Length: 375
Image (cartoon, rainbow, N blue to C red):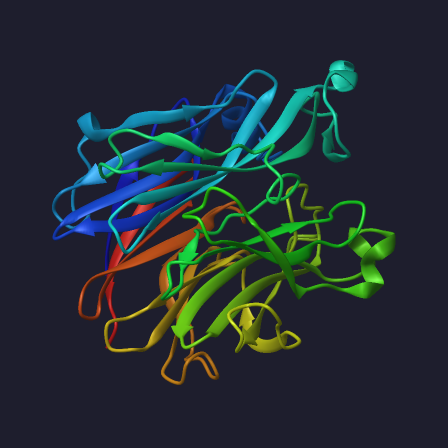
């Protein structure tokens, strides 16, 4: 294994990368950049993922991820006034177009709470901010990421008031699917699926992937099913790897202000996501997951490991996600749990590049990558 720093800025908090392979040795990574408020909070271990000073950036590699030229870096979307952005996710469609999904939130100083609408998703007095969910924003590029156009507004029917960290996936008939979630903190998160039949311009036909009926009183009354990785296995068969937060305390017993921790659960659909079997245990502890189908048919699941030794891990399935290998350690030894969100691509048969966000003792969150090989 060999690791590389994809992007690091001493004055910024960088997180939530998503990687795709454009062609040959050409790779593209989208990620979130937040400003001094987030950077300072990370250094002081009062982490926040809500910041009105936040943007989505792209950076490219032309040698399979060995180097990432600074001149390829660019900001492609900056949060509007009183808003912040999170969790970008890239998809390359069968026709070569790129889809970029972004989560948008209203974020404002606490004293100005009445200037934004919606139920609060977060109130952080230590940062002086409140936040509510606006929805998923979707952009499209027809020239490999050089120029982007709005496809879906975060206020559009269907995807408004929901969050996601997942990329759009495409079925054989070009139908697009997106897993999303909503609920917390006022009830446990529900994992949902939305569909588009017109290349991502409109979304509907919502279906439920997973929900804990005990959680209607609040997020601490049950399991939070949220960030859900999807994989199309063909002929209507989908597999979902679901983040299932069951604790909101770190392994040091300290409250986690931005999400929780728990096991990854798996669900399966045989009708292209219209209905799902109840989630089952995988025995994989981590959050959240990314699924990748290899050229030989096997499946890799990469995920963050948010207890000591904090790091990035992967498991391998040879039977369409029914059973999984022992964990493969990709990177470990971070000073805190605030790392992860891996995204992986296959560079050539069995050769993988996983990217993720990480930090060292200086507390600066940065985008990193590890090259590794599946035996």
